[in-house]
Length: 254
Ligand code: PEP
Image (cartoon, rainbow, N blue to C red; front, side):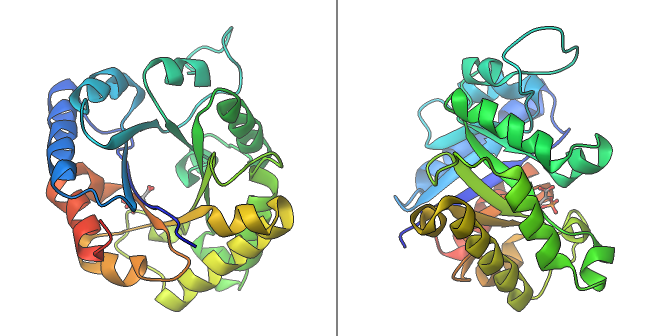
């Protein structure tokens, strides 16, 4: 289907001005040496580093994203950041519904949906995260949980151009554990089928579905060679230039 591979780094709550800027410069330099046309790089630093990372990425083919946003444009929302503000900082992407936000901030799929609509209205692309807990997988409910999250979190107006899905099993995040390739492929296929029902076949076939959860250079090849895996959302390994770019390189896609 010719979907462009997306290699996305989620820095989470890591990075101060000096090391965050250095990391971005390192990614920018390394991406210049790779960068096949069918591959896209993205880094999502904390809000505090967006402006300096944007500067550090100047001239490199690496997109900038944030890790969350509010649904309102502005106003009395202490501590929140709006999609308009993200655009103003030079962001092209925003991650929404990460399991850490769902768990630590009680974010529901309905809230993720409203945030995604607000982000799209400002021209931001969203990376909408879904994934089951270990208990849900053990109960045989992984597909049901992920497809329900897709149905509730993805706005009806979404298109393949403005939306990316990330399948991130909660139990695989930061643990070094990954599902079998058969399990990854099964969930990705179920997600694409659900997207087809909701957004139509054409959108579903072109929409990118990333895998996230303990992706490292040594497991990237087998994960990224799966038919329905269109890239990776990378946490821990995105904090080291050699690991982040090593994932793209070892996967042979970039
Ligand atoms: C994440 O939190 O999005 C993630 C995938 O983390 P890690 O790669 O560290 O498992």
